[in-house]
Image 1 (tube, helix red, strand yellow):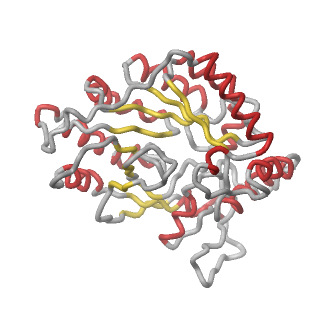
Image 2 (cartoon, rainbow, N blue to C red):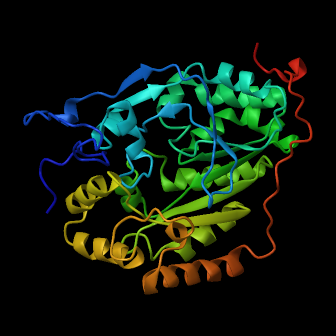
Length: 348
């Protein structure tokens, strides 16, 4: 039975100790169900980050928000909240930092002397279309800047809210400046509500793939993460569904629980799946050399052991069966000018 005190619609069920804090204090009687999400404006000096990881394909990323309301217990970005003095647990989902000056910072970046354009990943850490985006519209403004400067951008999101910005995405796609990657780790809606409680529903994500495809916006799908014992029986069903919806390609990752993601996930699975929690955790350990996390470049992507190999083989079958002959376009940097094209400004 689930704990009667569990917080519905929440990934983290409690705050976890910030590994950078020497002292911590957590009131015994704090009722997190009544704590409202707060938004704090921050003022970064830059918005574009250079990606230096050896096993990641992108060169740049940008994140208009810090923290994420979507509530995925396994989110690798949770530990980054600790640098701001918050917890990777409930704080990560309830204390959101907003970078309202991001569009101005992006323009400044584009105008840097000697800048050589390369596609920027919009997201990469926290979701650029999380619920806060409905209110602040920072992602929309960033996309408008990219269109104005004719700069390519790859969007990564779990939210069908991306369809709101079709009026910007369509002219970008006409110039080969944009692609969208939708994260769809499950099409089991009951499981989706537990795994990623405040994302778009699985049917809505699949519909978004269809609509983006109809508008000639190339779509990639991330089937991620694969958690053995939870969604590891779904890859072929998901690949068929996204292929039918028009996706051109897909990727996937195996779950890994680094740093303070581990206690958040362990508490989550013990809350929502107490009957199989230890089985799932042991299966993850079998892919991670006896641990729940893995920071080794390249190995962290592939995992190890029989379970990992079975998952890889399943995706190989799905690629051959549902995606053979499909190619994902490479975005163009040829039309970048380094100055704003006023004729492309849709809303002044």
